[in-house]
Image (cartoon, rainbow, N blue to C red):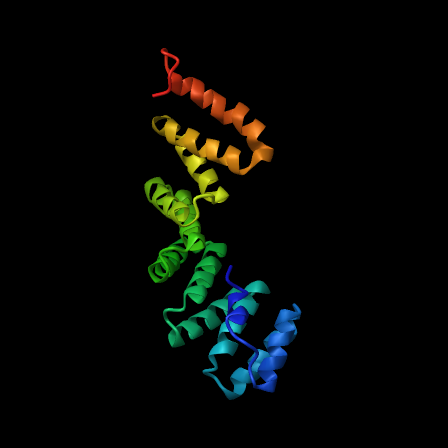
Length: 208
């Protein structure tokens, strides 16, 4: 989640109430921070910082309805704010609202096509929905941004392993995983890599 970005991208505000709210949030006192931000909104209903932070805090506190309300209010003011769109997508995904989650992940990717997090989360949803081809496309976009992304290689290896026609692709990703995770190398070698190599070598003993 992008919970920290709202504070990391700005300095403390001059308003004493916002300063208190920011400090409570940084200390992990989420309930106290929420009360301070709510106090700000009572007098300044369109305060962007308070609205954004109340979305984040309610999300972290496990209050999805309130979080969604504040995320949407913030997006009315800043419709192209990537972190809020992404957090809203995560919230919808966590609530099992697959259609809404996919919509917001797509919107987040429109705002930042290089976001590994958004592409990976959308791929996860697509995979759960049986849309394997689209899931693979988004996982490959993750690897364009970060070629050593373990989660993306893991997901691609599993997807390709399920289809014998793509076992060569599965082997490639398992080999990369063995390089990236040496502590798992023996397991990956014995369970996937050597069996796939034997399967792909064919009668001639050479891999295609």
